[in-house]
Length: 264
Length: 352
Image (cartoon, rainbow over all chains, first blue to last red; front, side):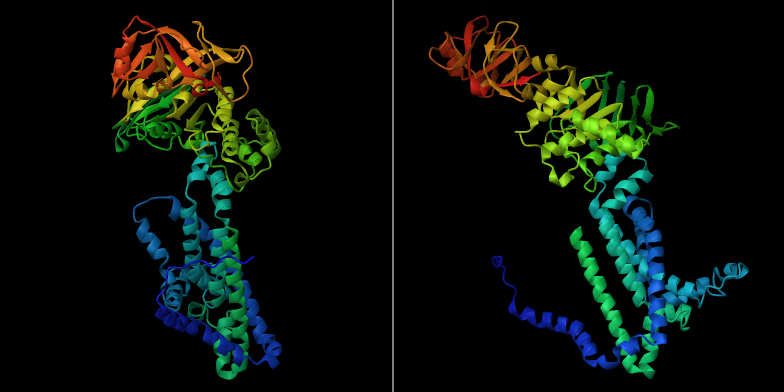
């Protein structure tokens, strides 16, 4: 059966023009990318050794950084959503800064933290660990830019879930750890999943901070976005084909988050 | 198990002192905003009073003397006070059984032991067949039963009930009230309600709050028979006649026979019960009105009391509202024998 058409309060007709224009700005480049894709060599381009290295590295590092984001971001979100202390607003704003910070600035900042001459670099050097320009650096750069996404998404979910069930659980004798494990986290699981997916997507696309802080060494720090950027000058077809792979991943991510949102 | 509670919460203009004896159910009555829920929150440890003490079974749960060097505030999970609110607030991600098992599990019981206990508590509230339902598959009354089982399963030393029936359809309240009557019998309970019937049927004692202060307290029957506070007088306006059920009617110890509509589970002969009806539903006659299907209660007028545009006739514990005109026509005065008539369908009879 068809649903009866809902009656709307009129939208001014001229509004459609800028709205369509906006959609065009977003969609047209994707269409152009599709049109320019060298379908005949697509498979070969995508599976070349350099491509496979980059794709594999990207997936590994993005997965690792997502795990780190979940492990660190969940406590952050809970503390921000469920406690009240002086300077909390300021702390939240600062922690979320990477959302608006140019990634290259993040990369510089990381370099002066973990680099050989950085804040903690000396300590690491003494321990015989060099962070900068390693795969670890790639993960750190991704965590730096992706963590706020998870925190924002999860804190929102925690706030809208409210504390009603937590109060009930405590009154039934559950210790704070039990409340967190058996009530709070299960209830915000959809928010946590969509936050993690967002963090994964952001990690996968990370470019500026990675290049600055981790460099571009094939198989070690050269992730897919870096590979695309480098190939663009020597082998445009490969760049386009790999771009399409990232588009496909992005579409998949959007689909997954919508699914998680619906399950809520 | 006794509760002593004294609390001053200036932010909500509440200053209250009350006690609940071991195994006693105390109803906290009062208009909206009187501070009833604040008192429960103080007992549950969800609100820290500016000054006050909460002692449960000799254990100090809250001690907040102003300027005291050592303040005590035992966290909610360690107070052994379970709270049941208006809405059941069942954990949506657990089925009814695991909701009820939550308390035992939190106390350290294994999964199987906790579930066995949960099954027993579900049976105690008549909800064993709901064990594997999710909260969203339960009606309001069913959910509240499960929530009650969940609160009981935590084996609290003090049960706090915050208007547990306020959010339910009137159709399901009598059944839940019966369940409450049964399970609250030997427990230490603080029950917030604005329904005088809850106080009558569930509580041993009532404490009346108004504007954050205790304005009246005492045995339920005494307070309702002789209310001193405005609020108690307003809610206690109801006629309550206690007696035994026999042959389809309630028989009071002083010989009144009252027919009414039975609520809740079917009454059997000899069951203790209470008949409830409003003074406005009562008409006053000098002689028994013939040929009418009404209850006729022969009584002696003890008091006349103006009440708005009407006059309340009191005859012992019974009351009837009539017009001043009727008072004049019938020449009503204390000492006069009259017949109070009330239709059977205006009378609600509850088992007690």
